[in-house]
Length: 273
DNA sequence: CGCCAGGGGAGCT
DNA sequence: AGCTCCCCTGGC
Image (cartoon, rainbow, N blue to C red; front, top):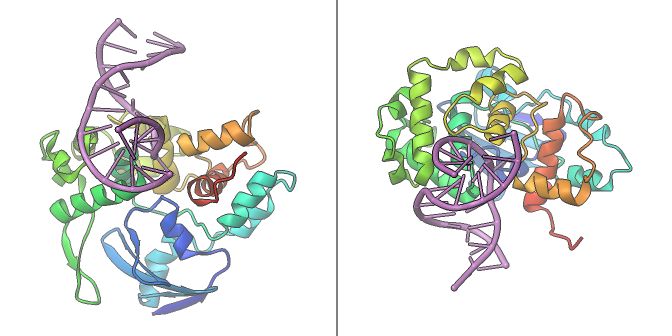
């Protein structure tokens, strides 16, 4: 068990902001997450966070995963005080972190996310893991499933993932898995690329467009300058940023700001304006 | 180049 | 009972 006091960290918001589809609320203050074949439970009371792992595993993996050492307060303080909308969005989502998630898993997850809702995305991914992922056992002796490697999904028929409720997205995932398994795209190499180069490479995958590529860059590669333009963000742009979002002001961490806006549009009180 | 239909099926109102 | 959904591909 690892205990830490962390500012600007809210596991509930992190779970609920639509970047991780394998984090679930277990109990009032407890959440579970499966990442890179590992299982973890997180309990939060105020600023006190408990992680159900040993110090060594925390240092080696989860600390980076949760972006613990990054100074989100600095991002929040950089907001233009005259921008009431953004000030409010940041206050609402002040515990959000951009997780360091697995590149391959994010690629598949955001292929599935297109024209889809978050509840169903979770289910689709759960189905894929249960059917094709490696079975593991957590510290409670409960079974859980890792995310399947590309080679497994590459061997499927193009519409076989329709059985996992993917619909027309099935062939996007299978073809992309083949591209990865056959070495047509080298994800290890993409990991070492800068934002623009990585995005261009990802755009070559079947089913990956502008928006999905940016999500993969932000959540799978931690390129914080990626700014995914989805329907929620477009709505916010039309309502509040008719002259465009002030990306220059937040250069280098636009993606963090995007998450605050996204989360507000997704979960904030809907106002009539 | 721009436009837009079509593509699962479930959540949300 | 419709409308929407963290869209992209392909045909025109």
